[in-house]
Length: 218
Ligand code: AMP
Image (cartoon, rainbow, N blue to C red; front, side, top):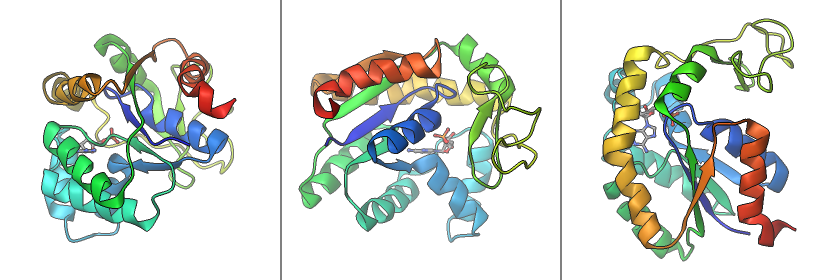
């Protein structure tokens, strides 16, 4: 089985898609966004240096992200999906060195593409369960909760992410355009990049990814 990276602008569905792939194929999902939010929640040593920047939609210092990521990866290096890491060239080079030491490699990098306008529309509807963390979107027929604003499983009221607002969306999308797109070129040069249209529906996105992974999962 292969090791994957998902790269995407905000609201393209990285979290939702990686969870589905985790359930379908048993990948281990590592999301730096989740690791950073967890560091705030447990009042970890980097809480202060993360909190304001994350709320403002800014990228967190490489030193912190690399450390939290490395700790998490080393717990278990079985086939994984990286969600939201690397997000700049420095992180991509750090990842290369780390994987070199561990004698593992990234096989495929999947770019989930959506426009700014669609990210904006999805922003209005995204919410998640505070307990099981399942992500819903009231703007999508596929991702709507069964009962208004309640988790299908836990029946708890759904919450919005604190950094999901119009102002931070602009910054996050801009960071993607100016910084993360360089990571896309980095993997394109290594011939590892696969483009996926993530604008139609979750099931259509999964269909395209299955085709990309096809030869290893048939
Ligand atoms: P995400 O959950 O992927 O949307 O990430 C939410 C926020 O966490 C981002 O807007 C950044 O503030 C921060 N973040 C997540 N991953 C990274 C990363 N690889 N490098 C820097 N900041 C990150």
